[in-house]
Length: 132
Image 1 (cartoon, helix red, strand yellow):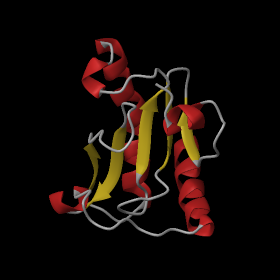
Image 2 (cartoon, rainbow, N blue to C red; image 1 turned 30 degrees about the vertical axis):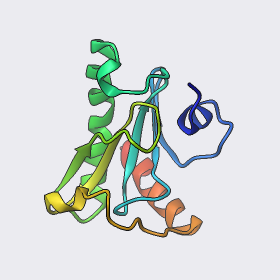
Image 3 (cartoon, rainbow, N blue to C red; image 1 turned 60 degrees about the vertical axis):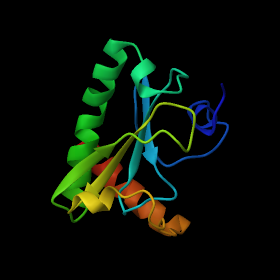
Image 4 (cartoon, helix red, strand yellow; image 1 turned 45 degrees about the vertical axis):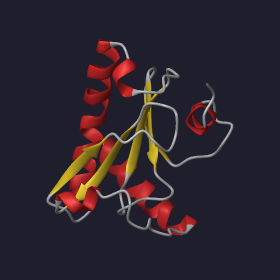
């Protein structure tokens, strides 16, 4: 079940990677619903989040925690929201999105049309915050 996320994990497709460890990868959504939108994926190729081994699910949230804090610190929002939709790509993943209201997690809205310069700036902000 190779997906676009697997291709990103294996560096077959470029991505704006903000964090990585042996089990997980976090990168910018290039079609974000808000500036600062990050995807967190397990390197394990599993379609549905609830099919992940229990320990992997726990560790994915722990991996996502500092990224969520970096999002809140660097993008205007009341908090970093988390959502699991899973319809777009058949690979388990979390959406971390800066939000002010629950409606900011409405994935039926039009996505932002970010150019490479904007994505590079968002990427740099998050990478810098995660180094601190």
